[in-house]
Image (cartoon, rainbow, N blue to C red; front, side, top):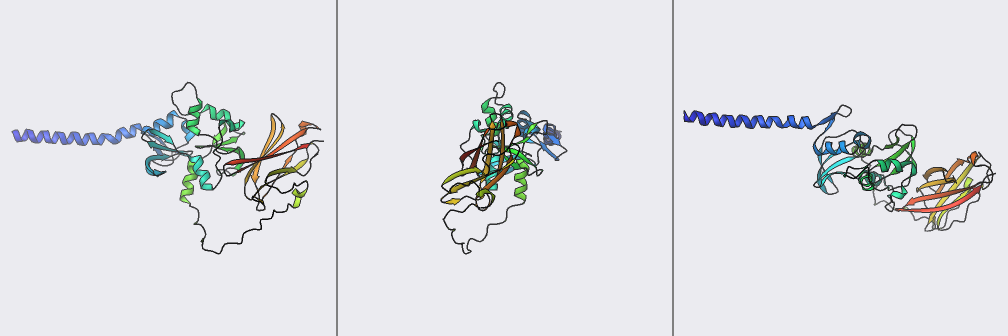
Length: 335
């Protein structure tokens, strides 16, 4: 009889152990929130963080399961979302610096000297209205900074990778702001998580063989400006230069604005620039592009007829290179 009781207690303990193990997935399933759109789920600390700090508009849907990855040399549990990457650190859930990562991957300059004062007017209200929940009253500056980080670029028109359209865009440490005036939201966040994952699936080709015979150094003498921009072109000296081919245009006419950045006696090719055309305090245009292979930037615009004749219009060029902005200005007078 005693052996029977021992056997019964042993069997009971085993059954309770099995039943307790069987309940673990049920609890995890109850905690999970799943999305048919991507066939992925979120749970635990990541779900709590996602829910409390902006959910779909800020992070988008999950696009991977929670998984182990090495981020900046540290092994972490992470989960990717359409717009960001959530990382579980010893101090809690943190956001990936995807704005920085995408620009580095694209080989584009990152401006590290910008502050909240450099946020474009189109994006400031959105930046200030969103933030991580740190317990402050309303949405504080530090909460917005924790969510998005500082700007790392000026606001420039860019072609969007998702739809091929051009939008005013500003990059932040953890996000990319896009101005969509034809939508109810006006400001949307770029799909940086999707873009980084797609780039990992389609890595860039290896660099060319560095043992090839190097091409001869270019002639250090300054280039000559020819073509449409030769009219009113300045002397090619060190620094940034901007000019217009018609300094007294009629209202509603098209004007060609030209710019160069000279460093080391050479006009810099393939440099991002932003044209800022200021008619008045609240009437301006933003245009952007890159200098061509010869180092020349050209942008045309139509003079706003509403400013009337005799108006002085200021045109500023801003080159973004080596984490700095290099500027130059010129003016025209309307007729």
